[in-house]
Image 1 (tube, rainbow, N blue to C red):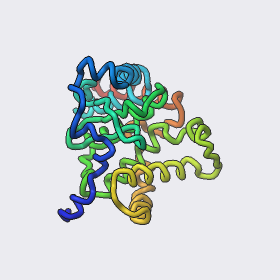
Image 2 (cartoon, one colour):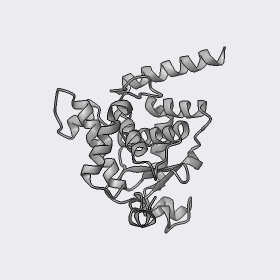
Image 3 (tube, one colour):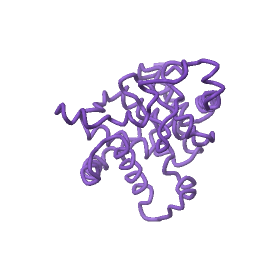
Image 4 (tube, rainbow, N blue to C red):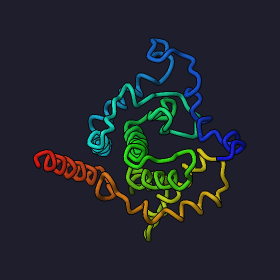
Amino acid sequence: MDQSKQREDDYGYGLFPQRNATKYKKGSIAESLLTFNHKCQVMLQFAMETSPYAKLLLGAMKSSGCAVFKERHFSCEDCDGTVSGGFDATTSQIVLCQNNIHQQSHMNRVVTHELIHAFDHCRAHVDWFNNFRHLACSEIRAANLSGDCSFSNELSRFNFGLKQHHQECVRSRALRSILAVRKVSREEAEKVVDEVFDSCFSDHAPFGRIPHSKKDAKFAHRDFENRDRYYANL
């Protein structure tokens, strides 16, 4: 990649200032008392233990040889006010924006969204920094499979539609995520999203379906566990 382009584009790291510097020592009493860190850690633990979306993804990553550990692979940090989380491919770590996530349902969605990126990183060896199509594909999959575009979430955003509304929501949110972390024009981002949309929208791994609701995700998790037990007994 052109070196001047690399200097111009910080790949979204500017949205996560604590990636480079931290005011409080990690895990310190000051961090727990003076930030939202403790609440973030509690909500993260609850998401990992109870969300069928997260449980399926954690199981799939373990089966793929990429076991996820809470202390190693998640980090609650203060972020720019425009983002809720991110996947740091250089450290294989999910960043949860503790100053922007205040409800458990929001935490569940963010954990799921970023775990989909982590799953793609594990199974597909995504070139996050040099291959724009790879980034676009993972953002489409994360928007499609995480519940970001569920009916209830779209209703809460006052977004209504009937014909192919889910697809349009996925396209819109994938585009929004790309523009947040890459310094490219909207036209360029739309072109790449359009090029990969059909194939990436149809890739439902590891869910095997689009989990439109928590109930769908529970069924997908059950099927995954049954499939996993089947292969373990072969």
